Length: 106
Image (cartoon, rainbow, N blue to C red; front, top):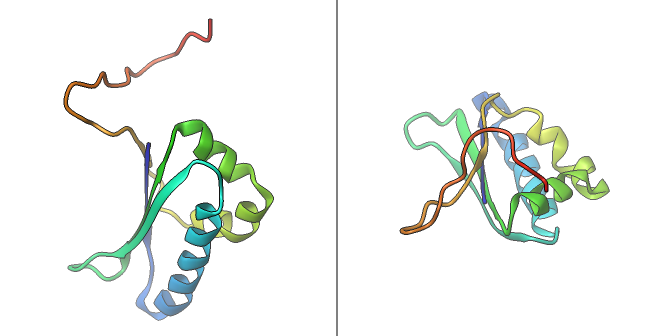
């Protein structure tokens, strides 16, 4: 699963934000199920930043968010994210896509 988290950051806060973003990415990278992570800044609008992480599955990501180290190092930064959906499923040829709605657990 992909997590695309976007941030709007004033240029005066960019240096401090970058350090916090790197620390958050490192905290997430230490968690089981983390496959990769990339931080970026928009080329046309330098106040728009992103953190993209890739996880084995949604459970790994959710468990990572509940880890103490992530709560201390990443969650404060993630709370600054633009309020929009951030979890995406990979779309590969021939795969079934998730369907919106309630899921059966039995």
